[in-house]
Length: 88
Image (cartoon, rainbow, N blue to C red; front, side, top):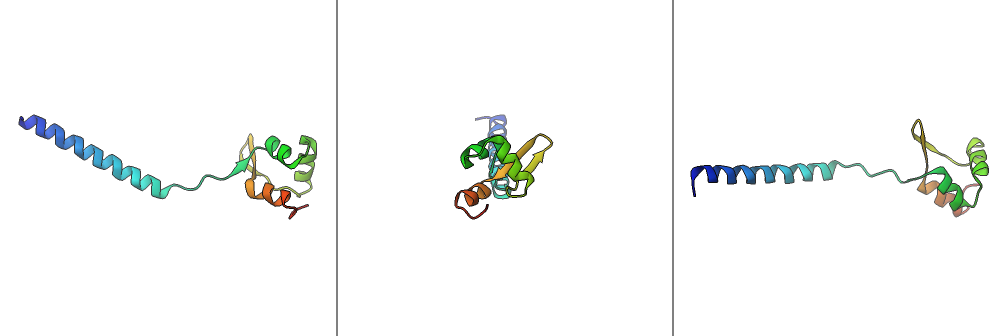
């Protein structure tokens, strides 16, 4: 085995260790994904039409979250609370 082979092997091990260390750091710093449901799916799960769903949003009976200009979601906990009868 030549010196250059040893250097190559050492660099490969070093890259592997760095990659696994970065993976560990990233996995420990990850934030949980928000659990949200798109309005059309939320309306179907709640047994509402789209119009009724948005009327209840306007009345403040259903809380929605704007993720971006064009994306709105309803928290999974909000849907579960409504299905359980905890919210009107």
